[in-house]
Length: 395
Ligand code: SF4
Image (tube, rainbow, N blue to C red; front, side, top):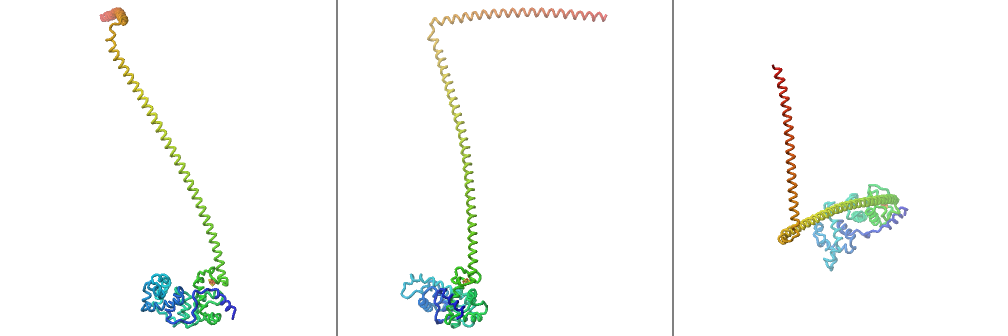
């Protein structure tokens, strides 16, 4: 046994297969083998076989099963004697997977017959890996069944073996088989195909392999490089994420400060506004108080004037009434006499003044008349003089 063969056996031991590799090619068509493999992924080998038998009984052909409801398929998978409605729920995922498989085969082959896979090994190894519901792992079983137990080889399996450094990659299926077969122990061909097919399906993608998750990464040179790159990328991403987080926090802090400042500004504005309002209110109150005080003062003055008027009226009314009552008192006579004496004295004074005035006027008139007469004489003399002189000249 070569080193590569040993290594292949060791790597195969690290791969956990979802279903055991069958010992012999099962009876039935390749399409039914595919159905059985899909069911096996969800159910036990016995339940899958029993379910497939029940489906065969229930439906006239597989196309009828394909177009039927998932619930109807699930009912066929329920074991005999079980409560169908409650148990059918448990078999719903298996029924869904089965319907998906039938639908995919129909869409990719325009029928539900895979017997053509037996005709060309090359065509089969190109077509089967395209059935995503089976993948390279379960598809290997289909290829194995189509080739009557020959080692199934696909390009995906060869890619994995190439990356692991076990074979060189080539597009020729015959050459691939020729390079892989010497490494595989007798009777281990299907397990090898299923195991490395599973690695291809789960991790070893053609463009973006997820080597850091692959169970074979510690034995794979290519995988180690990818894992180192991935770790570096993770570190870069973590650093970037940290920078982004720091930026986000800084932006948050800036925003918080801005909001605080804005709130402070708004608070001050509100405070100033409140103060303005308070001052205006104060002015209004003071104005109102002044008005009220003025009105009070006015009212008090009016009241005082009214009281004064009332007092005056009372007094005058009292005065009017008083003479009638005080006719007799002798004391009152004295003022009357005084008044009369005053009046008389006044009358005398007035008469004297009048007389004096009259005298003065007469004197003035007389002196005026004298003056006028003197002026008239003087004027007459002048006129006479000038007239006589004029007349003398004329003569
Ligand atoms: S480690 Fe990567 S390259 Fe190697 S087999 Fe796994 S997935 Fe493929």
